[in-house]
Length: 482
Image 1 (cartoon, rainbow, N blue to C red):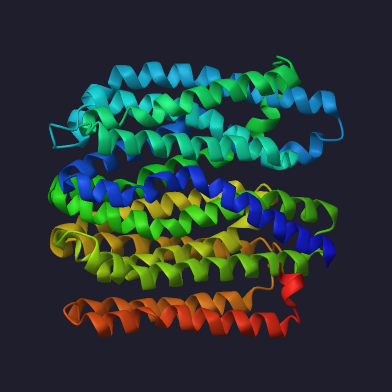
Image 2: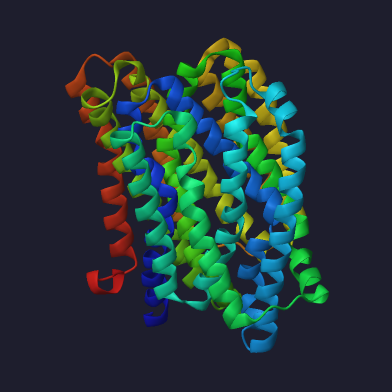
């Protein structure tokens, strides 16, 4: 019990720290929405989209391989150091190649993909590239520091980037009143010094080594995973491109804000997963059968934390929309509860896909992501012209459900053990029903503010009862819970 509680406690610490850099843009949303027009906000969102896609091609999934193999090499310090150095050199070389290719084909790619002439390759594409290159190495370093439990440097890297990037954008927006074309350069200008210093610091400790056999070991994990990463990133943003092409930048701004707020859950889930996966993998390597209950409990706690964040988001959305946002963003009141269902479905996917990652059955994960992407494109193409932003969210939900169904039956067919998480999965399903009811009631009662506020509190009430039930059922005291 004590070791398990330490896992949970350390997981929470690393989750909060890992959440900060990604959350910097979210923290600044009030400034963006107040000082920028919806069109300018949409342009920043498109720039962020491109900068989020490119690191997948730059790292080729090598940044995630350290989570899988670190505990295999930690007993052999020389191999561990050579492995980390090999990954740094490999990602750096790949970044140069991808950078050259993207610079060459980028202008034509932007002309084909986006109808908004203002969103041109220069400066938006170049700034996205210069953000993506250090982001790939940054992701590797976070995973490495997390596996080593190097909390001090983990704090410096995350908190420093969060503070300086947020401060830079605040100065740029409020005091310098920068146009969007200049504002997008702040993130790469802050990110590069942190990554350069981290690279020098890590290579100083590990030495400069490159071993092909270690690269092949890393690629044995990342290569089957690569289609999953690429399909996932590309297909995730298909809806944005279609909205930009079929509607206009104002609709895109509303949709991006909707997904950005609802994606707080996904960002938190990703940070939580990065924080707890090394511990879970360590438990799996020790004894799969003996540690199923311990891992199941961690998954249940993760699920309750995610439900809590969803409930807080649901209750805060009407407050922010009614009292702080421009009227053009009023549809957020019913769009965000609907979009939160995507995060609920994603949790189902994580539970059933995780064993596939550990047992190196990642080709099935890639297949599921490909299926999701194909159906996402198909339903976005069919639904966006007819139903607008609601159609885009429906397309996301349907395609994600198809992915979960495939992963579920794949896990059963290859007889991989499953966790005992029936309670949290039931809670997730009930939350989906509540969110759907909140979506449709809010849409028709938007003018009745008090009623909308009351309805928005229902998810939080449900999560509170679920949390109390879980604590009592597992005989967890407050001290043990912390």
